[in-house]
Picture 1 (cartoon, rainbow, N blue to C red):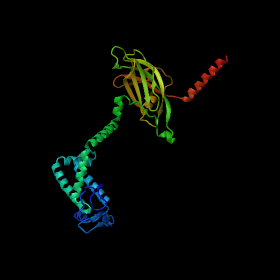
Picture 2: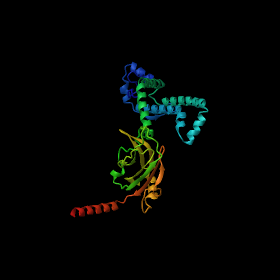
Picture 3: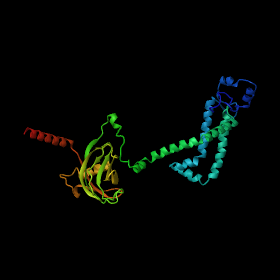
Picture 4: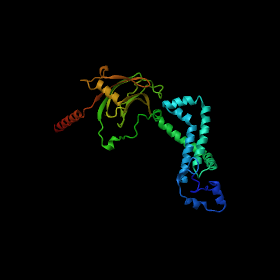
Length: 348
């Protein structure tokens, strides 16, 4: 209805709104000015059942809503088939056994809704509606290629967003955090962050790296957790299927976010690149559980099975790890004692 004038006549190339309007146009009467000053009366009952004598723009939007309602009726079996509610599932089972009956009723209901809606709109006729429907179909066919391209781009973006976790895993970027941003920081909210030390004793039962055929694995371990910088151990050359790591690294954990993931990657170093051999993914909650088991209840520490937990790697292999809280005050006291010793040595 956007191509029509404000009164009863059609737009450029558009048909007249009624026979009376057509006669006035042929007789040279300016119907645009006459309709411009026409006072709309709202709901009138001069014809059965009633008429909506309202602005043409509102009549156009009523027809648009009616067209979408009819389209929804014809698409109802497909739409209900995608919904998960009990009513939609029951309707889908019923309608797919009686599609011919359903669409027969839809045809009758479509004709009734169309005729009733056009009948209560004084500035519309069935001919007008069919003409503008043909114009709409013609526009769609002329721009069909552009519409297909646009829909393809939108569907591609939707699939990438929907499967973003799998895409990140396939690209090997699922453990990398590109933006170290948390909404609690600009709001000034306190985060339950504290340091934790991760001890790695050994890895074993590893498979050979896919990039090496005649050489043993050169193994190192890499840790990624939230906004922490990447932590790495040194490279253990010619380690093969396993070796003793006996190293540790410290990370800041956020106890307020128990679902934050720690990615422990066992990698092989080659001449130019590194490749992943196996991985272990732990949540912050699981990491705190390991800490309770291995770090908070010990009076001494040695690299032995008593103080470490064996965990399975994916796709194969095993890693022995332990976790312990870091007391910053003790470290500061130790650093102060070391500085005092250095000062005494210089004095002497």
